[in-house]
Length: 190
Image (cartoon, rainbow, N blue to C red; front, side):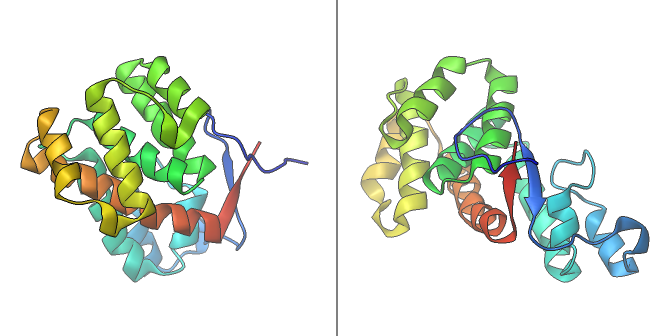
């Protein structure tokens, strides 16, 4: 029997829903239409099949997610993944942390960044740009009202333009929401 995963890892565990996912073969036309645009465009996961119980919200969620995480302008993909990782670490979402650190590693090969985050979480010491990104996304995920002008100034100091800053806010914010869905709807298993 598989056991829940409780420690951060870059190896993506299986995600097991608490509710029975929609069966793709017997899904309604509305559910099938909503599942056409999956977050990674790589297949229909158990998570998406679970969200398909509400096809109207899934139909809006997936294109929004794709635009935030895979947009062509603004923040580079690896830094969006770092923002998602910071939010997921703060929210203790083992599954999302694994997915986004794995993507960060695939894009950057920077195991030192991931090792520091896994070892020290919010207290990780990173190079200045990564530190500013990580700290901002973590702060936004912990107490959003406390992320203010000084934090935006730190992002500007390390070279982030306004669109890049917005992308960081969006990537951290969508994972504040996604992490809560993952925790409520299922758990990662090893």
